[in-house]
Length: 196
Image 1 (cartoon, one colour):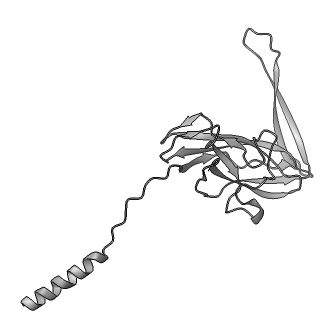
Image 2: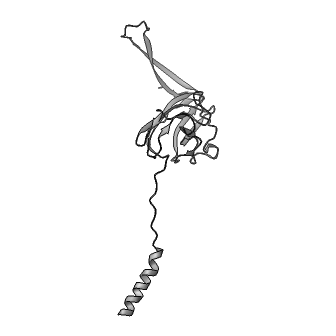
Image 3: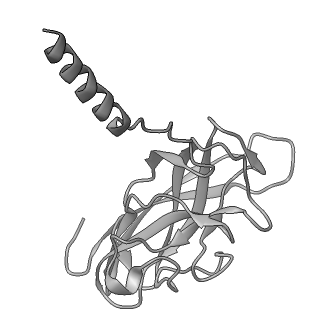
């Protein structure tokens, strides 16, 4: 009995050093949770543009800023895009309002603290050739690091020409200034050759 006990004790002591504990995983300084985004735009004519937005929540430990070194911006590209749509490429969806051809927008708000949600707002311009495209984007901390790439995109359908039907309704300005009445137009867009 004593021999069995000693054998079991020696086995337990020899195995004990093999038990490895995992260190606690530190929260990333720059991380986010996807919240929501604007719907895919309707059919656009080639070269046409549309405003879009993306909401994300800061779940990292760092406060995000929107200017200077380390500004949090939306970067063009993703590992989920085509081979010519990888991170930091010159986007075919660039609009004149973008700060650069691979950065459509910085976060809204000068300081986005941990737990806060912020928005990117920008314009996507349809390519100059007809087709169905995916415009991929990934959050980036300029000059520091890229954030997780979850394949955020908007599907863009570009057509050669459209038929446009306009219904106009007048609105009246009820303030005391001298601004004239502004017509409000509702557009119905359908591909060429089809009536709405």
